[in-house]
Length: 312
Image (cartoon, rainbow, N blue to C red; front, side):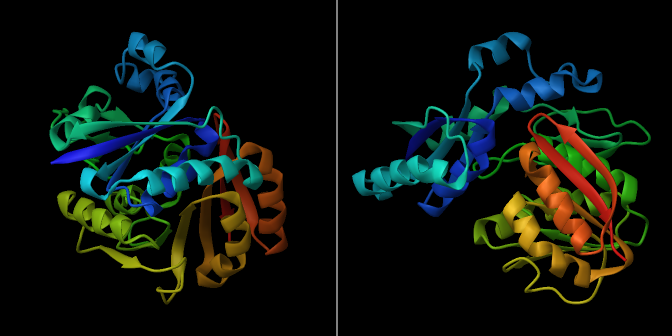
């Protein structure tokens, strides 16, 4: 089957927003190639062999977001809509960078194999290792391995925002915890929570493709009995209280969502928020404190930060 590969040259800051645009315009899958992600990982001696320095140099400094559209469904109207929406990102305070849009025809085999030159087992926390299904990895006694084969749909789980969330989950998940993962994407954080000892995990995403992929990934990792994936907006489709709520989204949604997060947390529960551009860290912290959260710690990585806060 033929596809149109649409590539947008942009920035790390805008890559998630560009991905959402491509999905909403009909992309069957999206691939983010961001040298900043790889550089961050290569600074960690535990993942020194993740990707060759020469390959990072060849990638340059721009983030490349690639969306894959069935050839028969792609047309000039879709292309123009995507280009217009990317141009408007600056109105939302995002630096789109070059914003260059280009297209080419590819086969599904080319697309599926494009992942493999970049994606290797990598340790993204003290214990959590992300491993593609086609790679071998000798598991150490204390490691938690997540098999994540992104195939045609999602990224590799190595974005700074995900890494920081995993580090915080390793610290705050306790055996038997109930966890809500809001905006679950590929389900990686919910799966990590389950493998770190959570008894019940509810993953929520507004996108049906995300929900389907999260269910598939939970099955691959043999945690589907503890990971319940639901399609819905934020916490509208959950009930009860959680010991930990994860929201790896964007600052604006975290700010508007923080009051609800408090009401869905058990006493002394932990709210882990990420996807926050560092320039907006203080704004998010002020809102969390206004909702009576106690700030436990703030992690920073690249242009991003993650916050762990305790409910009252």
